[in-house]
Image (cartoon, rainbow, N blue to C red; front, side):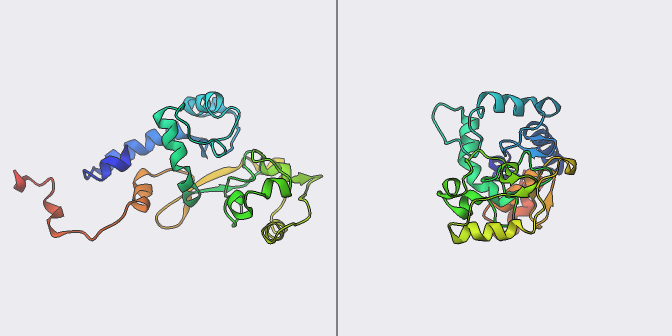
Length: 214
């Protein structure tokens, strides 16, 4: 909605603030983005998020669900846009009970499903629905012997990351801003600025909405 009308009209700042508050209420649950593998207590977050998880992404996560005509227009739009999410979404790991091993960007390598490739779940082995915590045994990282250069790079990266600890708190999902920083809040205006194709400002743009045109 925001992206479409932003192409047509210049909205006041209050408009974006209102939309941001609505998006936060419906799409964010304790700073966890919808469908990112988080399985935290849904009763403390958005009812819409809880309903989507219990009725749409019950058997498969958002990342592992393909677009289908059986879904509503809203769900299909979400699934069709998920390839853009790795650009904006980052997982700040805590106890790693929520973070998806393959789909979330919880290391500098980005989503490991893209980095390691389709054979990754068979090589390690960890299912596409696996959580990061499932890659730990007896408090230490545990992966199968490296069978590819990508898996070897991953193992090297993991040596610099501490294994999950229950006392580290929940995993936290952050949203990338136009300035390149990561925040735990969503900005519709900032996201649109990063997605749209920008053009030079024309001299007559200041007249749009001006009474001098009446």
